[in-house]
Image 1 (cartoon, rainbow, N blue to C red):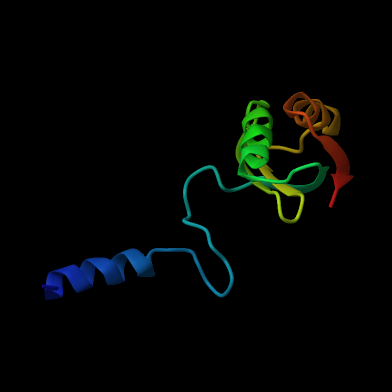
Image 2 (image 1 turned 90 degrees about the horizontal axis):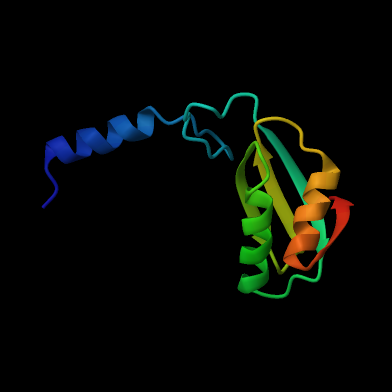
Length: 103
């Protein structure tokens, strides 16, 4: 059973979100100044590939988030500052794939 109190809590949580339109942020600390870079990677075919690449790229200093999508070959990396592409290339190579470049 939903109570008025439950509804107020949900509305408060929604109202404090910074999401608007197509934005999907939580306003969490550290989001300011983040750099998002999308890379094209050759050879990903499945979830295991995605995990292998995500694991290696996540180990790079300053990386806060990695999302690899085998269906598109795209790897989205969020970091505290711009990354050295050679470091990303080495991580992707270590995982067994080929970094084509930025998308």
